[in-house]
Amino acid sequence: MSSTDLELSIFTRLSEAQADWQQLKDVLHSNPYQSPGWLCSWFETVGQSLNCTPVIVVGRCRGQAVFLLPLQLERSAGISALTFLGHQNGNQNTGLWHADFYRGATADEMKSHLSAVCKQVGADLLKLENVPETWLGRDHPLVFKGATSSPSPVFARALPSDFGQLFNDTHSKSSRKNLLRKERHLQAAGNYTIAKATSPVDRQRGFDAFLEQRSVRAREAGIPNVFSAPPAKTFLSSVVGLDATGSAQDHGAHPLDLWYLEAGDRIRATYLCAQHGKTLYAYSNSVAHDDMLPNSPGLVLIKEIIERACGDPTIDTLDLGLGEERYKTTWAEPVPLKDSLLAMTWKGALRMRLEAARLKAKTHVRNSSVLWPLIRHLRKMKAGFSGNS
Image (cartoon, rainbow, N blue to C red; front, side):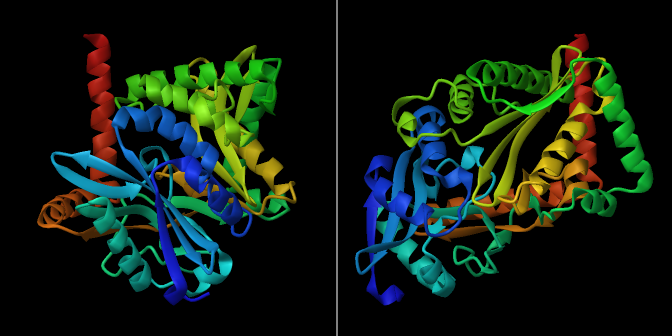
């Protein structure tokens, strides 16, 4: 498939690109954060509160869709930026591609195509964030020359069928022994269960526990709670299969599964996960700050999820998402992400310099072995002072 035969279409309604979306979803693996169900739920909740406009870009060769990029036009301080749709609540952005076209697509060609899109929709700046540097065995064509490192990588690994070998390879003998001891303490509390919620009642119980536990963690650690605002709660409720709104109901199964660990008649930890293609994506988790916290129910839960994934022949990859946490570095390896910025106007050039400086500073802080732990410590101190005032 040659890019010389390429025709671009731009849609401002997600439903208008539904047939192309479905066609490409069946041709090449993508990720759950750019699936129709996820993005319809996001746009009808968080997206509406941000007043952004969808810009769904479809490339066709001889009438066949060869790529689809779900983008959005954001406006702030008189400047319009073309970014990935729903990037505020996703972990990475890849786009959807026909395998044959993807193998030959180049960054220069995609840069030219997207420059034309920017001109057509009136964007001052193109901002493509959190794109994997390499994806499906090759450099990603949305990583342009001069792209900078994203502030955080995602953490992923290939999963073997032998969980025991994986556990031995990733954990020392003492850490394996300690984690299994904590698991036995949780089991001793009675009514011990690790399960993926299947009924509406269990999903609601798990969802309520997730929101409460995330709220407590944010308050005690002094960090923002991205799920505190009503639109974010409604979005999350929809993607876990509760109260789907509007066109999100048309996409069948909900994107996220809700796993939970229960001990002593209480949900002690949760994890929201999505199986997409042959990859298990771990999206967000929570843990109860109660008497069972010393037994690390969150670590026990993710161990069990990974063990079951190893035994599932339909899963061969684990993706633990954005952000460096100790348990992620134990189980998986960092996968670099890149940010590409392209100014289209003088206003875009000004915003690009500011964005580049912001991203560079954020990346430096996140990767600093001194600054990032210090900031986390200061946040906890601030939370402690607020709680005592």
